[in-house]
Length: 282
Length: 309
Image (cartoon, rainbow over all chains, first blue to last red; front, top):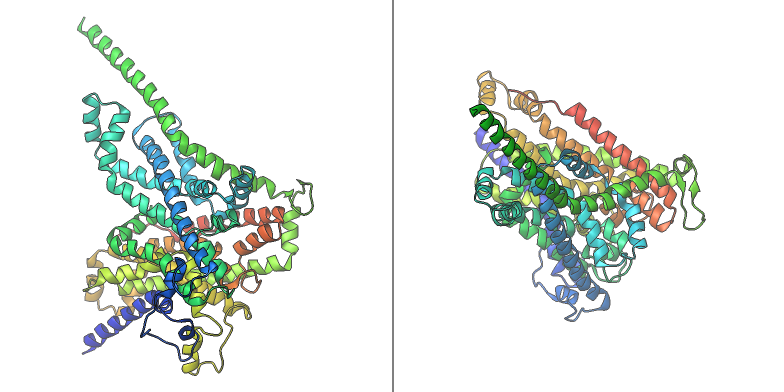
């Protein structure tokens, strides 16, 4: 009997954990399907009975609620995809090449350079924020995709390098050695042998980097003063409490911002769990 | 005779590996060069600039720039708004670290044993960690909304409040706690996973021995589980410490520029980019960087002791 009570208590507690983790997202989803008057009426509508889609349509410039401000959210969605995607590409190419050299080649300053790169992982945002803004404005890269992509990539590279370094170290060296004995050059070995085997690791690094880019806020806030380059995060923050766009549309935009990471979490659940643990324990 | 053959062979081998290693040497530098250029130009050089410029008068409104020693630091310490942000950040750390550890440990212990659907539950628990902090601020701001928020509606129907409240912006501690809660929501998954990872490394015999000895449920947790998951808790503490010291996104969305619940990071942002006082912004940045690095290394040293079975 006592054991059965304990089992039920445990189940109830797990139910609470699920509610705590999901309720805010559920609430945004629920609100995103409401009409404006439903969202602003008491008693609160805990479950929308007749969901509407015009809040989402407005973001893409269509439907009865379309407005310039709502359309601006659509633009910022394009921006966040370009910026996160561009930063991911740049980070991957540079970090993978560097990681391979650190993992497989011997050169005199290797350790020093390796730890220099890794040490920047511990730098908080403060350390670089203001100078990066001034450097980018001197280079004329404020309000450009390139400026944002450069800043993101320089921030993401140490982590991407560290993950890829461990991926390359974990590959059995015998395969690459065999290629070298067969007369392949170092570059051929890297390109034809190591890269294809490291594909799962590369995919993982790409996903982490993309999600990091997707979540950026203070750097794009500082580096983009006009809507031409502001990502979804910056535009969403600017709409809160301003009453330019109704909260139903803001919640619809939030759901779009949530959807990308959420889909990745549910698809790659097991892998992410291991990755987080490995990444923070080491 | 045979001796010299061997030595000649050895010499030529050494020469070829030498040539090989010279080539590999050049190749190594070439391959890490792009990475280093980015790190030097956009991470190390800016850090050096922050360090130097914290001791300069740099104000876009009152040029020219010149050396002022600790002038910026005395200025920020005598500014009441900035001093309040120091105090607020202390509260953010207390709430952030405390709540994250309690919730993370509880969730970890609850989800430790295998059950049907555990994979999906774990995915749900991780979800807040993967979402952008700003977006979390946005959806919680709607929950906290003073006129249409669900929190007000629920509290009122439970008769816990008599009228709708403005939760963030008037009372300091309440504003900080509710803003911190949004960050706790985001970072608890990390603590949960770290606790789960440590729990999995505890051998089952330890529990069996305790059960044989007649230990109660609470004794097992206090005397066995908690001491053994210490390394995981140490890392979770440092992560929560760094993240709560650096809280910005949630503060920016929920509190905007008000001093009620301002944080070190939000104060740095507003001093620099709204007040255009770069010198003081640099001083705040340097201070925050040093505090972050020192506190996290210190916490790690105190908390992290190897656990052996």
